[in-house]
Image: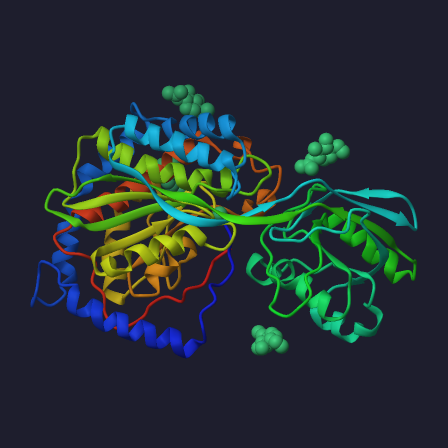
Length: 490
Ligand SMILES: *[C@@H]1O[C@H](CO)[C@@H](O)[C@H](O)[C@H]1NC(C)=O
Ligand SMILES: *[C@@H]1O[C@H](CO)[C@@H](O)[C@H](O)[C@H]1NC(C)=O
Ligand SMILES: *[C@@H]1O[C@H](CO)[C@@H](O)[C@H](O)[C@H]1NC(C)=O
Ligand SMILES: *[C@@H]1O[C@H](CO)[C@@H](O)[C@H](O)[C@H]1NC(C)=O
Ligand SMILES: [Zn+2]
């Protein structure tokens, strides 16, 4: 999960774009009950007719021939390819493999859709504390960072907790390495030290910056992630260090001890390369041009195996279609799985996909993404109109047998944000992901974090929601009430 707000060119532009697009969608999007007012009791009765099929899906995934299938497929994949950073040949090989597997699984219209993606390469890197004592610092350069000079940067450290403190101590920052020892609040709040830390340190004359890893729990492991330089601000090298080392240097600085660190990084940004979003479908029987989209991202950071972020989300999206295919079901609308590329560099693949498909936005019934873990599922975080929320609440009741009926209204995001910002209803998997950030963007993000039963449950949730919505008589209602904020939940 990348989890930073999408930048829009000013709120006014965003609102205007939304209104224009919404007016367009309102004229285009007419369900099968044209002229009939929305009637929740009719929808409720219709949704209840899906109880049997929902139970068949659940049974196939939890107890039937597909038991542990998504786990086994994900294990084969992550063990074979390991981490898959955008720009790497390894990611492209992994995409080729997926195109083959999705085809072998009997899915339809399997293909890649081109997207140009950043190509950042870490290279060798190290950080060592030289004073007050010698201590190697486990570290990971942040995505997009520049290199240090070949001999490294050796400088005194200024430790701060906040950007405000940095501004107050601006006159002490020149020529130093700034270490941010920010307190963990939540991912959404604390991640700003990763995304903006280098630019803010550069503004006060620092030579480099190190951030305390953005995580609530650490066993001395650094967490990487993308960071953003700012226009007209000198780029400086930047990396993550462990919570333990950031706190230690904070304590040393509180004692007035002089801290010296040597940082060496060989990171470089190469020209963008052509990658692909991976697409597979079950074509709709009646309205094949209308689409319910399920998704996760196939790329990962260049550490660990990218099993949790976001192998799990990508593979339950494949599994949702696979379960429907194994039951020989074909909904009225097309079910489409999209495995995004280059999510980690800032939702790059999904943005290209949106740009290529925005003229069809009125035909997108529902967009789903799982990118916050595939632990025990509870339901869905949903953004859409009030009436769409009422329909989804009925659909979620089909998941009562596995306790995954909870619907949280008001926000969803990630790669599906582009469609949601023009009024397409969207949702993220709600799951017991309180441990998610322990592993996020580290070497610890491996198959060991994943659990076969949890993946069976998540796959069933994804399949039941996607199939039912794709097969209802009408598309989900849209109205002028924007019921979500395009925020990213962490
Ligand atoms: C699925 O995984 C569970 C937990 O590891 C195991 O107990 C069960 O035997 C597995 N089922 C199959 C069909 O392999
Ligand atoms: C890292 O350094 C080692 C030895 O110092 C060298 O063999 C290797 O090629 C370097 N790797 C990269 C990516 O530059
Ligand atoms: C960056 O600097 C150039 C040249 O001074 C200026 O024209 C431009 O507006 C600046 N951009 C930003 C975002 O400040
Ligand atoms: C659902 O929750 C109930 C009550 O907490 C529990 O007894 C049941 O085992 C749960 N079912 C599943 C499939 O997790
Ligand atoms: Zn992710």
